[in-house]
Length: 101
Image (tube, rainbow, N blue to C red; front, side, top):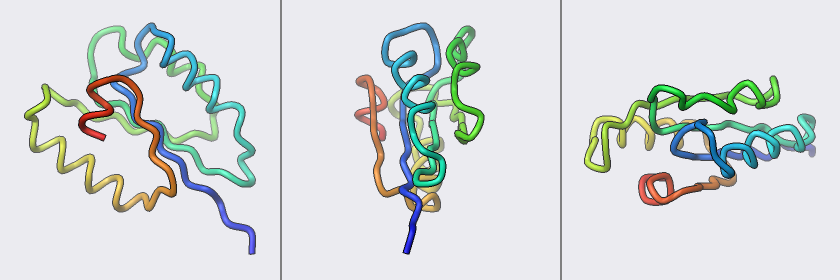
């Protein structure tokens, strides 16, 4: 029985930064026959998609538009998305994503 490993990477945004570059690079290193990768960004702000073009084409990208830590509406949207995604692993990076994810 060969099963895909479902992995979600949750980060603040795809702006210029080390975590963003690392995550974009990591997305290319997984074998798409054995892993299904989803990248989740929490903020939409100007310049926040700098590294998105570096992500492997097989990777799904989901963007949320959090206004801050107490954005309850987007928090529940994120929870619903993660539950429906049935991810085996969720990797959070950076303080806001660590707190909310």
